[in-house]
Image (tube, rainbow, N blue to C red; front, side, top):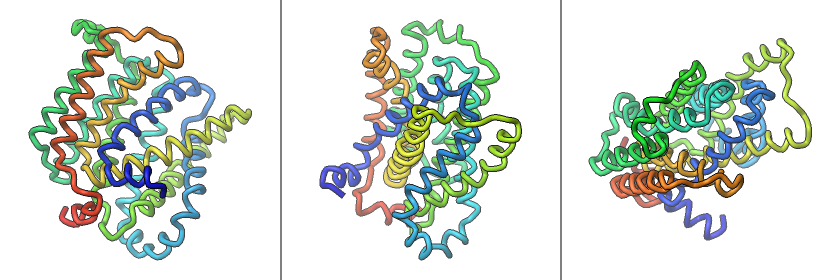
Length: 314
């Protein structure tokens, strides 16, 4: 690994911004393709492609660690069901009817759900400074969604697609907590590969049903490029970084970084589409960044070499 990438990998706090940055492109892209791409078929294909790319790098380790994988098959199956299928497919379904503002608002509840799930499933307590950061970043999200007017939040209207989005975000919150239950002896990349395989297997029956109903993935060069981007950058790259941050910093602190999603979305629209960046965007972004910073300071993150010891102690 090049020294620059090794430096980033050894300092997971610096990696926190990357998953929400990548996923902000996914939300925008998914809104465009929601009608033409069957959700479960896209989910199946993205994980098959991601798995095939990852397989040569982890196959030897996977074979050696097969006894550990077999002993923890329920955890792997749950990770595949929640993080790989539940969140992905439900998000694609919801984006057919859910408005952009509602998507950003509902996705921003992930940092609220993660510490709740972490407490009940893993007894992971929230440090005071992390909680303060969570509250501050939530205020920033609310300020952006209300366009600087708190009364505007009351005017938001939610649809069936919004409720599906809530379920999708809940699935990802559970996935973020389940990752922390990975056995210390199990290689993280092997664990991710096993979850990808589980996700592909679980999505297969639903994809077959879509095929039987006459729904097919479009196959133009642009459509194929979109699938490759989703599989490699979003499905593989973002998940690798997300899992690394959770393993080192914990589910709660990593979850707070998800509030950066509504930060990157208007910035990308401003840069790519020329949309106006209003003052309420800047004020909300400032609050979100302050909240993420406070949570990162409160995480008391271990050094890179201490990660395995930390997981062992849990």
